[in-house]
Amino acid sequence: MHTNKRNFVSVFLFLIIYFFSTDTIAAPKYSSFSLDAISGEILHNNRGFQTRYPASLTKVMTLYLIFEELEDGKIQKSDLVTFSRNASSMPASKLGLAPGETITLSNAIKALAIKSANDVATAVAEHLSGTEESFATRMTNKARELGMYQTSFRNASGLHNNYQKTTAFDMAILGLRILKDFPDESRVFSQKEFVFEGKTYRSHNKLLFSYPGTKGMKTGFTNMSGFNLISYVMKENKEIISVVMGGSSSTSRNSNMVKVLNKSIKLAKYEIPFPKSNPFIEQKKINLKYNSVKSEERRQSRFEILSNRVDKILTIFP
Image (cartoon, rainbow, N blue to C red; front, side, top):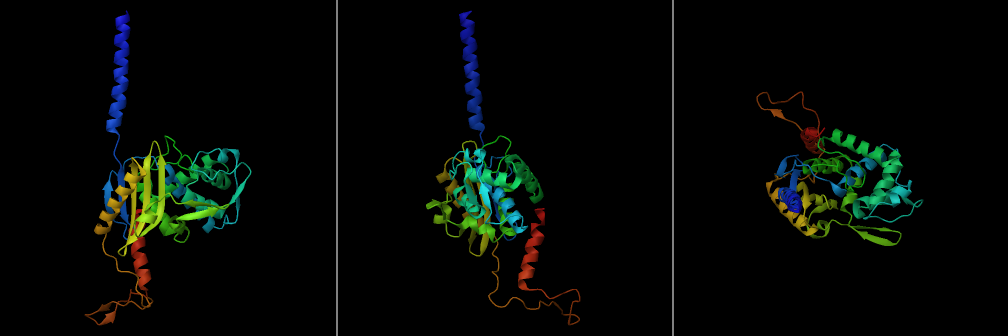
């Protein structure tokens, strides 16, 4: 009888060790993806469509909805966001405001983009939608509108939730859309630090300090997601959006990102920079056979032509 029990225990322990070990062995390596931010062309894809946990990359969507409401005039940067007990209870990274304390929406935006404050994310979500759950539903709906079909949100911060998932591809779309749709507001991602109540908070994105041409965007980490990063780089007259997810450390993630960026910059087509001379010159196409201007041609600036080309390419992102 005792022998049977020992055999049962041995088999049970073996199965536990086996399943945990195979799960570890089968755990996917990091995924990465790059887009040419000018042409929309895919430059790099390594498991880019594999489902991942976004961690604090989630806050890019939180900021997207904030920028959208600012543009629509529904909120102002001077608005005060009050911290609920729920918001104040969020774990680090956080600003640490107590229930009832307030922060301006302007400082909240900086805290999200630079400090990646989880308590601020929850406070803003409650401020805009009443509850974080309602705000998360809006986030998921917006993801669908942008073409992020493998993304679902359950909170505004990126704190782990088994049902909050995305892909490197979807995060690249989000990075591209927030730059295109809110070019002025998205500059907050390039800030290396901000000051709140006399304390200076430095960006978690070390590539802002070490990789030339980096203009943002956002880091993320949970134990379940690994180390994530979206990067926006302008270099050699090229613009690149790259995403790395699932790094084993911030150092290895940054190293992988540098490799992906270097590769993507080489693959990106050389783009003619915006002309320094007056671009608002009538564009004419001459029909050499009849020596006349085609009737369907109208006056277009060089800027309009480039913009139309980008818009046409980006129609792949609804």
